[in-house]
Image 1 (spheres, rainbow, N blue to C red):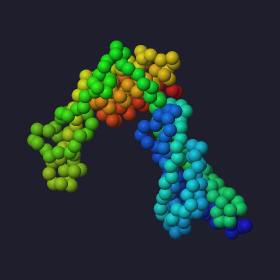
Image 2: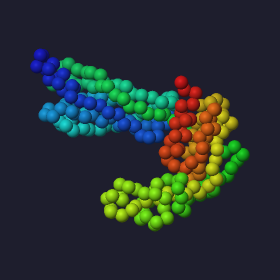
Image 3: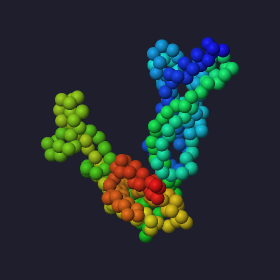
Image 4: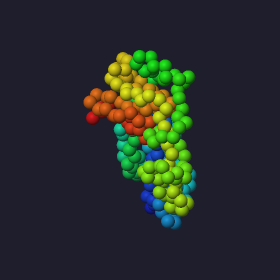
Length: 249
């Protein structure tokens, strides 16, 4: 029993846990949570490990020394807002499946849960929200998404130079962005229809996603905060984060 206890303790001692979530997590919708187990020991493998994080259990039969493995499970978050996963548990019945040993696995995984999107239309019945009216940018610009990397023409702003690729290829390379193809929209969130604030925020999430995926710049008025319109993926995630945090202390 003493030998079994020592082996069991060593088996779970060298394992580190990391949790990975996608950039977009929506309240009430299924999300894929990935657990990465790292065996940080230099010589010994880890056997028959189970990791419990966010109520999901991931099983790892064998993780060789210095390597890692991933397992995923589906989870549903019931509230919007910012969250931090601070820990989970690692357990194992190794070596003789008589005692199950476990320990806490410290984590620091921060993420934001966005309100669930709820189908809505723009106030005033703007038909450009529909798929038939959506435009796609085909011209060169500076405020859209990254379209491609091209050779420097001599007229491009120096701020668009891609210095890493320039150093690799030995000639100037620049980033080319798509242009915004539609009139900017400023969403006054609290004027949207809804039975409660959660429904209002959900309608705003839908509108932000739908408009910006049609390459239309979107800004927000939300309480005392105001965010100017823009059209990029980073900006869209910022707007969704503003909606997720609204009213949360």
